[in-house]
Image 1 (cartoon, one colour):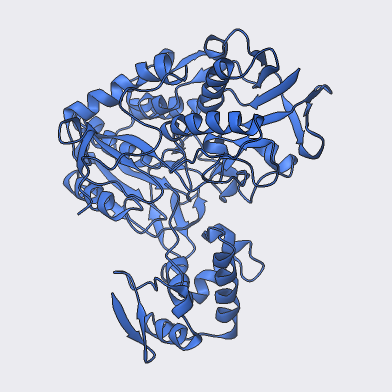
Image 2 (cartoon, chains in turn brown, purple; image 1 turned 120 degrees about the vertical axis):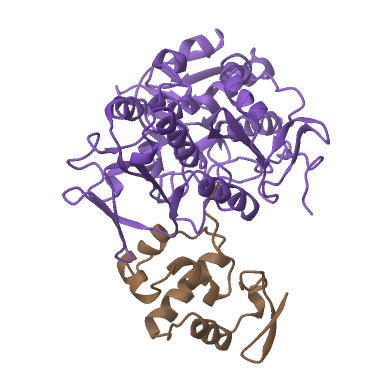
Length: 102
Length: 411
């Protein structure tokens, strides 16, 4: 489905995740953060850059992986994104929701 | 002579030995399989041990009974794999050269990854059921337990058989009803996922069953520690859940051998091409079953389907052909729901589990994603199939390595 975020029309899935990362930009990230009651700080952006890079390298993301990223530890990750940190961070970063392997 | 070495004589390794001893030209190839253990455990049976449904003798046989006589079984510890020079360094000092290596060393629990998990309460009020010892200790505990807060908990994904904790919850409900103490037991299911399962349609079906059985669910719970003193589990967000009996699935990791050999990722799983099953780092190393990092279930059915694909690709590799057999992530799992009923799910990398009929489109006799007695008998029959058909590498009739979409309701 389509959604207009920060004056741009993008494709999202039923949970509001962008389906095409190429459509993402920083303004969209800011807007999605606001929807999730988060004000982005430089630390947030550092982490968003990290997870976008991992996504581009096709590395599956987990909370453990974030904790070993060198950017934040798991406690700091929760401080940045208090509710469902991995789900929220990936949504703001414009990449798909990570699937726990099943 | 050239040498093919298989590491691990569990489900995947045993199946590969049985496939390849027929398929390889034995005038050119010797096959070795290495495992330090002597017993083969039917791991799906661990789920039934705590509830006295299976006894230990139902699930343990000798590894040797399932290895073909023209395959050399080596019962020794491995120190490390030296992939750059194509040999295995054995713990005793011997070296085992190989031309082709298959890694099938599986996954195991690592409670030490979570603070306090294997602390003072371990095997007193904190149990796992992913090991034989854990399942047996839990059986003994449950036999005398008088009730309280039972918390069933998953530490982090991926885990072996991701539906097993749910099955445990359903079977516990049944078990306590049967003992007439269900009203004295609160059952809570705690998961790091956002719901009962990762795929939407099965999550809806399974959450409905949890509700029906009066099992509470706590989702998005990322555990930071087990507090042994206060008997609570605490997550990184600060949420605490009290327990009288905690049944946890600790972090699962690949074999520590991968860390020693510098072949694993951060959880000791071997980076593997998800279609060809070739290791990403070394062309003459292939990986199968729980040892891989492929985004499929860690389950015996997956290893079974992978074994067909891998056998083809090993033959291609030997003939220096393209590795044209591709694995689609096919998994097929029975989910025990208690009271002699079960669900069946069938899915792959791209298709989530949906309702339908299996294996014959429109006929069944098994129903997908719906509770039935037939599915439960299917699950119990599976133990016989495992020992007599699956391990021997014999194809299961009408069930192909790659998933079929026929008879499924995808909308």
